Image (cartoon, rainbow, N blue to C red; front, top):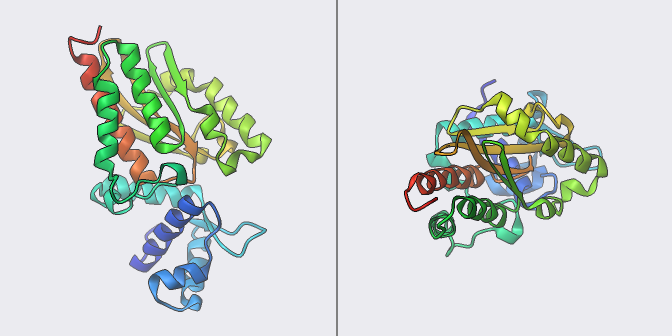
Length: 257
């Protein structure tokens, strides 16, 4: 369903504000951002809600994105990668980059952590641990039958997981992650499964952002992160994509044995 330019900008602003602050976004905040009246914003928000891109929690006057809203947003970022840099704010306050720490510096962290290793398993763990530190999500990699996971405690500090039912749903997803990846075999360089798009753990409200890469150890090698649907997709997608690229390069080099 197509959106007007203003509707798209409002949807993106809601997604990004919610990612950063973890609270529903109201019309007053958006009116200040767009320099228009609150009434104008409320009218556009009503249309977005009717189209299924945002929803209103029962306890708040603000709005939050739906899975459909996130999917629209991710599709735009995928089709127009140049827009990810303009939207590179991080949902996790602890790892939000300052002006002196652009995405290029974070890519350098991945390069050093992976490139300085002389063993394949160390390189993989370095990449996974770096993604945990940079995104605040759970990091994972799977190469053949070997599954690497790190950052479970970081993931569960996110406000979304104060609900025990949500934690159990994520645990179910993790228990079935490796067999599901073998069955689904995501074929794109970067694959994003949002909320109910995950064939397992549909009620966990998490997103799996995962990159497929080549390795001499398996035809099905992946690295990525699992986090709440509320996150900075532009930045995380960029980091996961780059992690796959440098890990592929490292594992294909003769020095990794």
